[in-house]
Length: 403
Image (cartoon, one colour):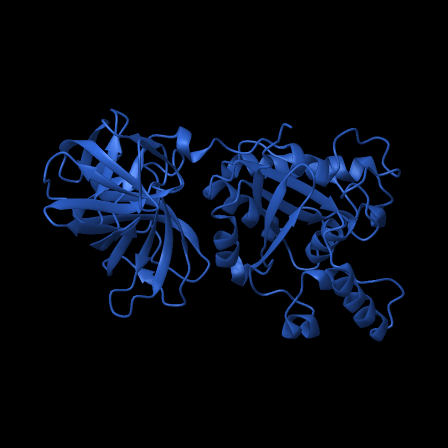
């Protein structure tokens, strides 16, 4: 009997306030039969208490009582559901401008982002911000969900006008492409099932698109990157433990240790305490090298000629996460994979400072070299955090630009 491997799609949702994002997510969960009976009954009960005739599907996602009472969503909520074709991890992010950092958190590991627009309002400032974040984070696929089409009479001209306007802004933001889908989350048009009200639209429903969009290349297909997390001494033998974040390693492979540049050969691989001939991302493994090299936590082991860039001058696009502003001259810590080094802020792209939720450009000078990849090439080894050395608080999320 043959078996088929079901893959997983991680995706994030973003929309301006009152664009109907919670209703869209609720409809997606409800119509794909991903809601438990007791959950649906609770939604019906709360909706009835509010005097509503039909269940308010937004309540399926606005899970916190304080959020329900205020009618807003203020945090990133992760939802898990599945269809016979694919598993899904959904990061439901808030729409308010002051929570841009929450969208960055939710979309940082997503392979697809749904940007929601109210068909009555068209492209608004938050729409442009969400497109900019998707471009900044190099999200591989973006869906423009034009919602509330029922409230504009399902007019094709309204949809096409919004798509054309968004396309112009998307190009300016560096967003290479997107897939527009007209929907009505409240009624269910083009969410799980194709709409009977928009025969002019010939594309897929939202869930159909989510089930069939290509999932990115396996991390094991990328160049090998192994940040060392621990050094384990077993008598005279040293093992280097950590997670293989991309690529594969085999016994006999020639490797380079960064930042020292020393080379060696893998003589042993341990996976879950068992000796193995090979390891594949994203496994957690231990490596043994032929030579007693000076390898420590924060070093990166790689194979082949396609290695990372060794640099002390880090240029990056960033989203500032903290309430404390970031200014030129600030002394900070830069945390990249398992390595943390001292750094100083040299430039903020001409800005005087970055405050919470600001998107910007930054240049830092580090005290020690870092083995970086361009974020456009590797989201795992091209990302870093800027840390406050005084209290260890995260200040800024950075995406390295080495071009």
